[in-house]
Length: 251
Length: 289
Image (tube, rainbow over all chains, first blue to last red; front, side):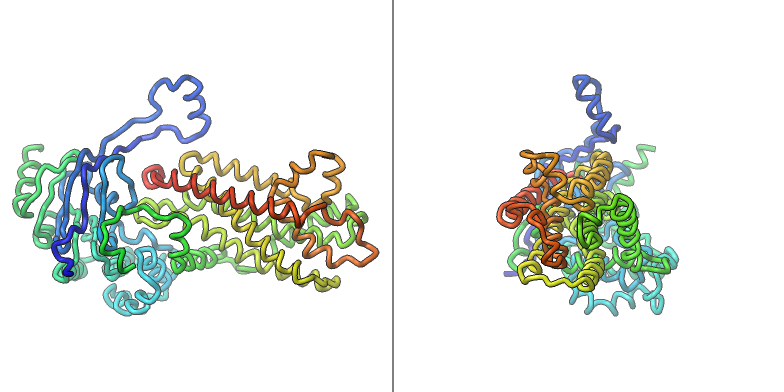
């Protein structure tokens, strides 16, 4: 059975509500209960309302929208970090995110230790990391500094290593959140080339970015979110121009 | 795993502690990281794991054994004391670190989905890595004063180690999860840690408690840590006593036949409850941290 054409990500009627809690102690919560739950202990905020979306295997989708439209929330629901308050998300195959690269780095460990730790966090097995290790180091251009503690790295080196690990995790579905602003221009070009290579290999890409020109070259399909709702879903160029039009009228 | 990749699955819904077993490689790396990082930049390094309990032991021995003269009533009081201290230290270190583990790893939990049970479990393993050298010191000291344990007593040591680890994991899951919502949890655990040392016969002898509590002594025995410490005494301290030092009340009655099984049941119940609480609360970890 060929996997192409199967659904990779399926979102049905997704709703996500955030509670902006003001209290952080047991005492305040008790006082509130004793007073007969008067007043609002928290403020609610609906980040996603009824989002339905289906992504097929091998599709490259750009998720676009202005700040606060719910893009990152949707990505976190797909990766499993957050759980929806309504609706269902389902994914097929291993999903890995290039979400905030370097989250799993520990400053006091060497680059080598961090490659193993971060690789395992992103779901790689020991053997996979062993096999990929040289390729990861080469791609990151870290070279001999791989045995230096990460805290001595420049911010560029840090991001390059983190990105390099992430692109080598080889999942079926790739979630990418604003990471294309990595390092200097040559490295950025290298990253984009790598991402395009992944797309050509038939990986499913789900990209969140504000860099509209960039997503238009990487992705085929665009999805536009506004205030937690999908308002447009179609060819990436149409969606980009629609978003441009909307941002102009808003300012 | 191959069959799994053909299915549509809900992301972020794990199988709790079972997933931790499946992720042993990551667990190993997390434990190694903690051990590496703990004593970074310190000259003595891992030696601190020996120095701290040694100083603690000396203080108690001087204050209680010599000043309060408990060593007169309890032969080999030093062994008695140290056997209890290392076990209680293992428990308290595991529990307090497990309680903080979720909040301490908030950067990861907010961004990447992992079986969150990994964090409390890894802290218990780290504590075990600090406990084992202390256990070696204890065994060395026992051998010096003529320790002749039976196979059964050695097996009991392993069993108790496992039981305390499970107990700390269960409580750590519970308090660690609650700590995400209410940081009061840390303070409650600090209190438990303080109480545990005194609520088990670490510094004194169990018969002193029985004299005071009388028919209510069973309440004292319900604490699994009390039983754990008593069994440790049975395994390490009792075999160092000479025939004329053994008295009828060296060990509490029914320790192995009744109280040990009861303690294991309580421990399993705590683990179950801890996992249950953790799973219910873990759903919203990422947005509450």
